[in-house]
Length: 206
View 1 (tube, rainbow, N blue to C red):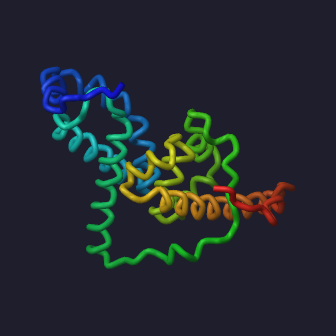
View 2 (view 1 turned 45 degrees about the vertical axis):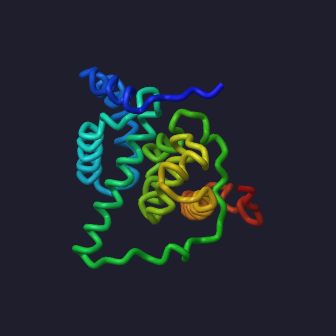
View 3 (view 1 turned 60 degrees about the horizontal axis):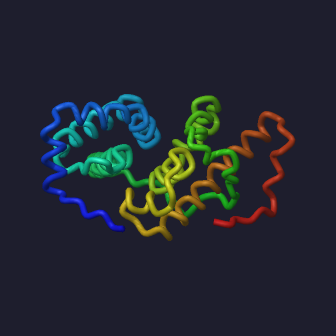
């Protein structure tokens, strides 16, 4: 049975409850900050991005459909705000990013990541090498890695959130994982870990 929702009535419910924004949006603050921090290299930039995200969300709260995924909605706003900020910065500084096609050809295995507990982000905080590798990753790939591997979104959900085809999500995730794997294996070699060569000959099944 398909449930038909009257959007106008739903919006009336959202705007008639003055505490709905606090109840629905504010609990997502930490998750939005982690996502913003993954996009912005500097803490101050991430703070600004979070502020802009919640300001835009508050102003647009009447468009939020009660019962929808608020975190996903906020992530969309955050990602769009980041893209606008990056475009402004690029125009201002006339700075071009490096060639995103020059990524190393090594696969990142996603074991023990999709457990719903933001495991990748936890590792990023604990392992400087992974944090640094993520910051080196070009944005089209970084946001996909964070959404799918860290936040647990499906390919379809990430596709809708980023407004790109599912095939693009798969391609970016593949490239992003390869890049991170190369950096991590290099770090493992540097610190003398014996697993540094185990990726040779591996294949991707995404």
